Length: 443
Ligand code: EPU
Image 1 (cartoon, rainbow, N blue to C red):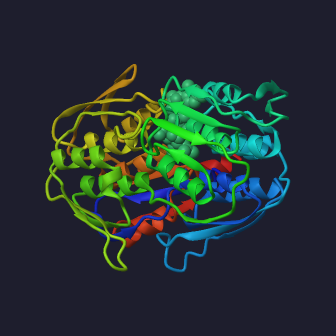
Image 2 (image 1 turned 90 degrees about the vertical axis):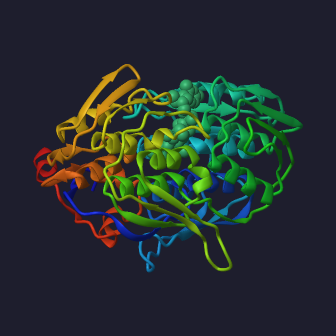
Image 3 (image 1 turned 30 degrees about the vertical axis):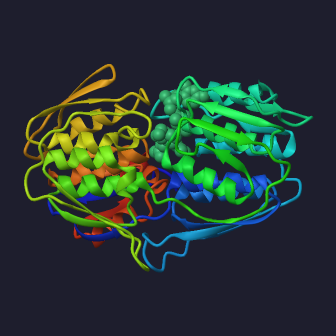
């Protein structure tokens, strides 16, 4: 049950060994939504065993799809599962608040359902622990394609009874979610859509690949201009998700902070160029292993000394990912020297800083800047995870703290990291889960 479990992290120890990353949460969720675009059975492979894929599976079931989520983790949490989605000729078109509030990525069914059904009602997600996260670009982009959109009784209600028509769309900011919703609507629109200032994240490229396999015509994947020729009908497909660069990056930072040595199998260094370059500047060695015959490849991160502090500015891809912000703050909190970390994507991401300060970190924020002055060690204490990445960052900070750190609200971490504690133990550190006595008192 949410909130009832917490992580218990014994400070000390270094990460050593090998860990595999599965397909990316932020790709798989959108690929599952993309399946709605074609009647019949699509399969997504290398699906992580996390809470969010379960929520998305439930959402698709409620839309009338047959969904078989195979999260068999016989090979450990690093072994990906698969999901088969059987989409009916006429899917449902309403996504309820009880699922949307548990996972705001549910909003990614807006574009595909509007394109397939000509109407859709998706509950509007409320506030969020990393920022206000408006949906204006999703809405204005779909309006450009001819939809009429209103908010009624907490739902975004979009209608296009005569279908969508291709158009030129300019995004004010390269929003990942807005790019995906407009793209998934445009593939079934009449004529050509051009999305300018589109997001370029590897997960967008992955979505374009899957849509192309389904029969869509898309030019410019991975660039900031996407050109989509609409088509009448798409066909189901089977697609292997791109590996999770944020989970891979988390392992890279954890290895560096704990002065460890970790091979991240299936990690794609080319999706983490700036993040890995920061680790090299910090003193780590990063070795890339290209995929070979029957071998997925990956990268190895090794560190023998105290890391040096590194300045970071988060930006949309190919910039430094905002989802790795907690990891770089945790690293700098035990690094040699001081660093400035600037967050440009989500205004509330620095909520994490107050928890890090409870572990004794010398951190000071001013607007969207944070100055971190490194200390030799932090000091274990009870802290709380506010979101997925903050939870992982606090567990990492606990590993470089004296004594025991507990991280409550473990369910946040379960949303994005398959078997995180189990994987950490397999790398030789002492991280377990336990009932949170405070949560029981609250409950
Ligand atoms: N924004 C607007 N209006 C919009 C859409 C976005 O102002 O209509 C703003 C947001 O408020 C934010 C910025 O644009 O300040 C970027 O938001 P974006 O739309 O790119 O993010 P998202 O699609 O909501 C995805 C990931 C996040 C990741 C961001 C940025 C998923 C499910 N979520 O969110 O991942 O941080 O892109 O890379 O793909 C996570 O996995 O923990 C996570 C939060």
